[in-house]
Length: 313
Image (cartoon, rainbow, N blue to C red):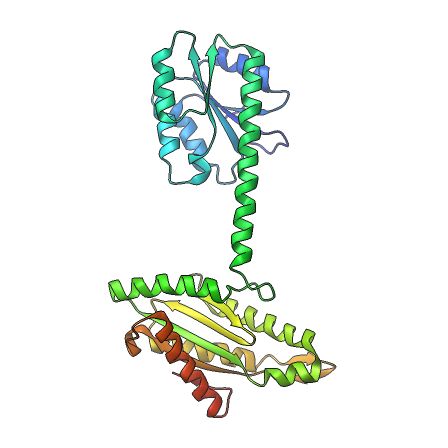
């Protein structure tokens, strides 16, 4: 039993109890199947939970009467948290057998369950086991949902956002730019003579080129930018808080990075180049994201018509 979180294969339970005697009793009933860590009161518990970014703590068992922050106040903080990992954390409240008012208050604050004092070991173990397993199932389901959401928005080859996700993100950024008059820029990129690469060296070679372009985009952009593969050999980068000049500089940096990185295809060194079009919210005054894309796409076409391997902004 420790106030510090340790590495353990056992599920971790946070016991919030100011009485060392009560803490020893609870721990004795649970320690065979759980790692029990102790907080002396609600404030210590809250600090430990807030610092538990890795979700080591899977369940909380808390007393009611404690100094600084009592059990009701701790429970209210947990349920009011903006962090899903805390808001959904199962909390079992320990109450006395005649503590009807405490049970009602804890229920109102979102308690998962109750155990009475003096503790009945089998009841405590059963309730802890039930809620720890239920919480684990909920976490696994949420992880599966998150994976499915990510897969639905990700291009499987390049791992960039796909066209649908790019549109969803782009519309949100466009609405913000329009509302607050922020800069927003768009870079559209197309691989020159990509069909010839596929026809000459095969589709696996073409896939390698696409993956490498995606890596170049990821390395060249900021964390808040959104690079995406729109389909085939066409890519785009959405640049919040960036004007046309800044977007043009980025586009040239990308173009040069691709040009200077030849591929070894079928024992031959092959230079790959790109054509790029740039548009911006402030410079072009588009009425919608679709129109911003249209402006960038027209300049991409101009880059193609002008001889390829160039940026038109």
